[in-house]
Picture (spheres, rainbow, N blue to C red):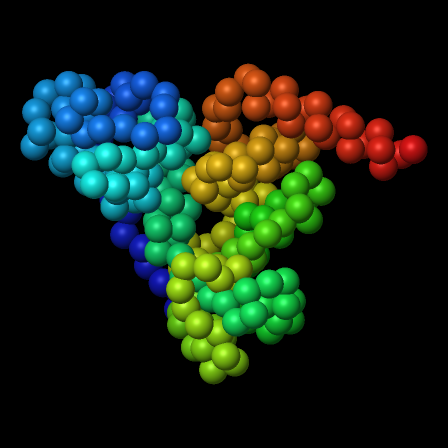
Length: 228
């Protein structure tokens, strides 16, 4: 049985609000959000929508935004909602807190699990070395198995379990959506996937031109080094 994740609705006005924020690492609710929203109440209400989806992170009346998501057009965001909510509800596990944990988890993955992000992106692109093992698993059985095997749940573990919300039909596109939703260095994996598998990705996101140029340059260099 699949774990059902309910989608959080985002209205066009919510999206217009978050896209109107200037590009910077940290925002003030009072100085940045309220002038755009029109009132403190509206600002907090709109920010709460994005916080519930993991797009906004609050810190004492200040907040940061996952710009890899908010730069996307509104019609594309619905494709990211399952990925966003899966990442929001992710559970991290660790035992030795090194590669041994990942090797153990990979050796004992459930039959119907699906590896995504770092390790799957590396398998598909050979672009960025992986660091964490992200796995879609159905139910709590594997989490319980890890705990029985000496793993602890917390914030530092390198084994990350994601709840399943839907059947994964297009594996490459799923990793692509997950990478955009995660943001950070994963956005470069998304670009690499789109460059290498354009026909496999039906719904394409938007990326800064300089990011695309960097990935193209790095991929060309890696290709030259591999052939020399």
